[in-house]
Image (cartoon, rainbow, N blue to C red; front, side, top):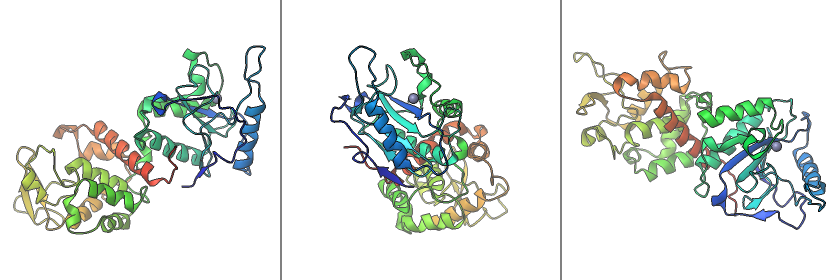
Length: 354
Ligand SMILES: [Zn+2]
């Protein structure tokens, strides 16, 4: 992931349209630039040209001309990078009635073009960071809108094009698409973010090995450590069982990363690398392990078994944490989305706005 701060590199005029507190931001407005994207486009040249266009344009509707003070979008997203183009404190003219509250994102893309897969991947990372990764912004999925959708403020425009508009609508209603959270795949967070989370939650697993060790172990199975970490958090609060309803002392000794169940047949071994059965109280029996690593290895192998492999996250959870056991798979998935989104955002080297 490449991120580039272009705030000092694009044409500006002195006058700033207006300044605001970050707490005033309540909307993310997604735009296209309306210019047909070509494969060989030079991102910087395209953005410079557009900034100059916004500076030279008379935005006024009265006899008094009103020229722009720079590119009117705060971020630009191409398949190559996320560009930070304006300070978030600066109000820009980009959507009637929503300038003061709006944070503007532009995807260089024609009205009749669909964004590229790379643009969508980078847009997802940017939105995850804005929504889950920043304490100074109070934004939620429901706050993300396409420019032309803001009809209640008098906006009437094909921007950001039919394809991107539909994508934005889905994102607003459902959050990041479920297929953005495959369990199998390369790591989507850094080992540092993974370890920091275990340390912050005082995970007892760190008493046996480092965060980097568990990270590499998960990755060696071809699974995304971010998802494995989210399961660990959801199942047992990273092994701490801090607010858990199960018998905390018994479960802490289980060293069972994903709260796997034992073989129900008491005459058979408990299953996998487990050495015993643990009675958790009202939630029934779980496998007990000698080491956290053993429980983690069993979880990884379970995810690669025919029951789960290749399924989207919600499909996995419908089996793994079924409603019949008193779980809510959709809520479980939403928590995974939120956590993993936040960790991915921390893993992206985006500059913080001053
Ligand atoms: Zn627009």
